[in-house]
Length: 175
Image 1 (cartoon, rainbow, N blue to C red):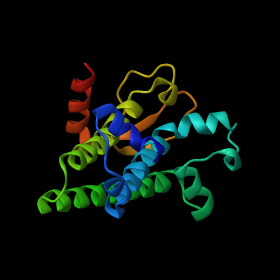
Image 2 (cartoon, rainbow, N blue to C red; image 1 turned 90 degrees about the vertical axis):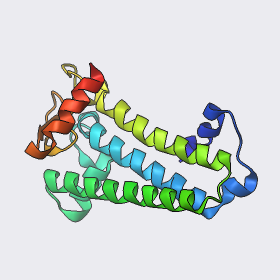
Image 3 (tube, rainbow, N blue to C red; image 1 turned 60 degrees about the vertical axis):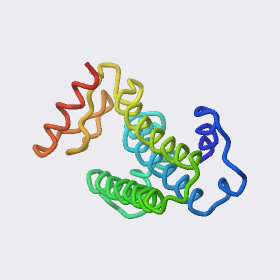
Image 4 (cartoon, one colour; image 1 turned 180 degrees about the horizontal axis):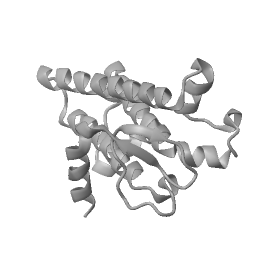
């Protein structure tokens, strides 16, 4: 993830070369990058389909990749993307928890890992509210999960009953 170094800049510190090159940090950076990519692919799907005039050969998106390479239906592809995203985020959090329990990290490493988490969370918020992804009549709320329907007019996710409370919390965040 090329923007990982911006975490240092934004937070006003610099990791040592040894810290930066550590395999555990590089693994966390890779997981953060995957998480950001998967969230982008979920929410940019509609825009990308429109931009490539519906010709999937010219679209670069995980959902489309699953449709084309695994012959999945749209909802099955979205569900697979969510599973990959969940697996990626859980792996990131497990590594972070293990490292923080070991108490061998420098303060800068802790700040950096927290910065990566902020990138992941900020990406979610940014993608959920991006009008160019969700259509010109977008109202500012996209359900976090549910049945995914393609529409040229805007993002349509029919929410699952189980997540209605999460959606209510999200609405309050945007108010």
